[in-house]
Amino acid sequence: METPPLFIPPISNSPTPANWVRKNLFNTWYNSILTVICLFVIFQSFKGFAIWVTTKAQWRVISANLPLFLAGRFPRELHWRLWIILAIILLLSCLTLRKFQKQKITNWLPLAWIFSFPIILWLIKGGFGLKEVPTNDWGGLMLTLFTAFISITLSFPLGVLLALGRQSSLPVVKIFSILYIEIIRGLPLIGILFLGQVMLQFFLPPGTPKLDRLVRAIAALTLFSAAYLAENVRGGLQSVPRGQVEAAHSLGLNTPLVILLIVLPQALRAVIPAIVGQFIGLFKDTSLLSLFGILELVGISRTVLSNPSYSGLYAEVYVFIGVIYWLFCYSMSLASRKLEQTL
Image 1 (cartoon, rainbow, N blue to C red):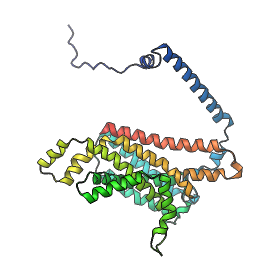
Image 2 (image 1 turned 180 degrees about the vertical axis):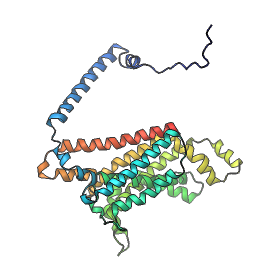
Image 3 (image 1 turned 90 degrees about the vertical axis):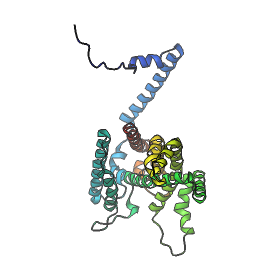
Image 4 (image 1 turned 120 degrees about the horizontal axis):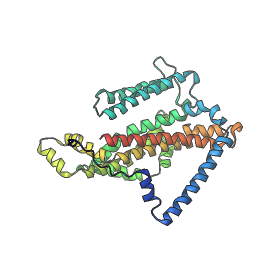
């Protein structure tokens, strides 16, 4: 008589692809008709798009201007700096991904990200032994990523502070946080960018040095995004049970430690999808900078299309930059899902 196995794997409840299709797409006669019609429309659309991509589209506009799309007017003899920056980012990203997979806490990895920023800025801007490159020569995908990364990095802590301020028991802090959040959320981003790019200098004292327009653009994006992030974080703060705060106080923890060790970790974990969604929106909002002469990815595309040699090739250019935006946004979405699973 055989000994029964000590471990019996659990029965999987996940349906097979065939069962899922039968249950969701062909469960009734009218659903079957709708499925067939939708599949036909999708096939015809994809077929037409594939034919245009492979036979009719003139991709020479992309191949001839690829360095311009990626780095703008950044001097070509200095592109080696950008390759070093790319290597640094890829290395740190791989180490971060490995950290998530192994679920180990690496103390030096956040510090590596923090200290890599001044190195990256030094390589882009120059100085201290490197040839300086003015911000007017920055452009393309490089400028889009730079403005998005800086704005995200600055808006996240500011949004957390505003969310905590709105929950504060101090009337002055609470009223200021509420006014800031409600006023900024009631204004369109294009209006805030206009104030930063055009009107800000009129409010400064006479003789004040004019701020770099890229700095003003990053400030506008940061202030706008922080207000929305504050509301996302506030929703996470309200999801933490009050009993945990009381239990932490009963153990002798003061209020700052309760917030840092008990409340914020749970609150941020609960609103990861909303926060990443705001980051994705901020990344796409950088395209509005082209309206003010800042040649990020969309601005460079308009510059390329103004060349008579590429007149009318709008579809090819915008399909190309659309794919770039989609790749980065989808990568952020995948990273957020992996972070949720890890936490």
